[in-house]
Length: 599
Image 1 (tube, helix red, strand yellow):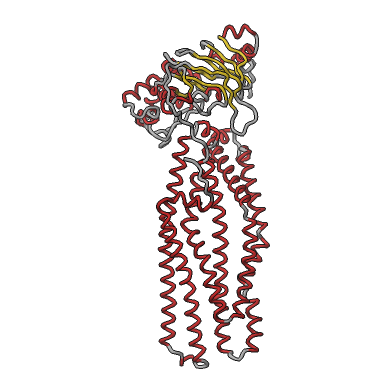
Image 2 (tube, rainbow, N blue to C red):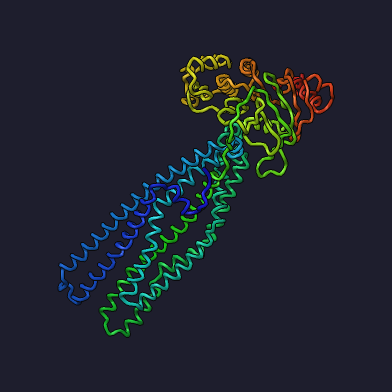
């Protein structure tokens, strides 16, 4: 599944699928309704003609004809309303299915994308594209496409009526319409695709920063800060405000001119009517036509407004479809043509290099190492050195640019994704638990696991005290009715997941970073259960956790600069030795012994 060669409305109709005929029916019905909506004006014309024919004593007017034209106008208005309602019913059904198809394609495609795509694209940005952009296309199909069809038919019928009764007044009325259309084209040119692109970018930035702010609001409140402390959110709001305000003000003159022109037809009709009336020989017939134009011409302004809004919504929809296709155009994780299966759980990197998309500097460059099955290796080094990126290549968060990553002697690109995911279990420093029961959270790793297996995994992960304090034990829903867990407790639930998964390879990425001493002790006990007999790759800043590793690889600038065991690396008196010295200093640091008493 990927991006189509079509764009704009054509591309939108591809999402509609088998419901496309409903849109056609909707457009036809809307056009018919638009023409019928003009008919009551003709009925009014005949009513006025009957009254003028009976003047000066209107009591002589034919009441039956007046009643006929009056009820005909009411009937035609009701018919136009019902037909338009039927048109909207068809367009809404098509719109709902289109939005469903669009979201379904997006969500199914997201599942096929590399895990790295999800780590580099924020949930706020993806949510906006999936929800709001599909919502915009739904609105366009449901309301704007029927109106767009009507806006093409109505001018033809309107021009015919304007020229039919009195061509002189008709041409004057058309002048205002033509001038209004000219202004409309100028304004639509201002609403360029570049503006809409910037507008959508501003909304995405603001939405993304708002999500991040909400996630970090506890920190903001603890330190007594305001929204200004989240500078990126504040800047995105100000940037959006300034952009929209500036653009809105730029419309002040053209919109005023457009409204004045379309609503000010009387400035031409009244002087022209006086001049023509002074020279006409059939005053009564001219007066009849003049009254018709005074009533009908202002109604043409609403026709122009519909054209303008439909055109504007079309550009918004084009940009929304483009953004949806920007996700669908992302390449899925390639599946091997010939499937291979790993023979063991050792890990081998051979001259691996990788550069993130749109980055200039490689994050991993020429990395080579081997982790034998059943051993523990550690990746250490300065922040941003490439440790997490290196580990993520094992599970194909991204595919390498050059070199190879192998598990059990087989390149991970040749292993089917489902098998590869069974081989590797990740434990991140940022634990993610769903708003579901503890049981369901643990069984995320293996949905077919029994309750007893999940309980055993929780026990192995040292979660007994957590389950004991929860009102419904392992069936307690996290995040409901004030049920929340600390960072260390969440980490232990995450470890229970990994234990239940029972993968031969375990990758631990700063798994104890946010744990307090008590939770860290229990997490370490859980590690012993999790890593027993497994191949372990550990990423750590806290060097005390890697002292017993079988191998330690020091990564800096995307390259391995040192490797060996702890004691040997300390003796070399190089980067690892300096890191160990700094770590020792940090753990022995404390508040000065002198105590100051404040009375």
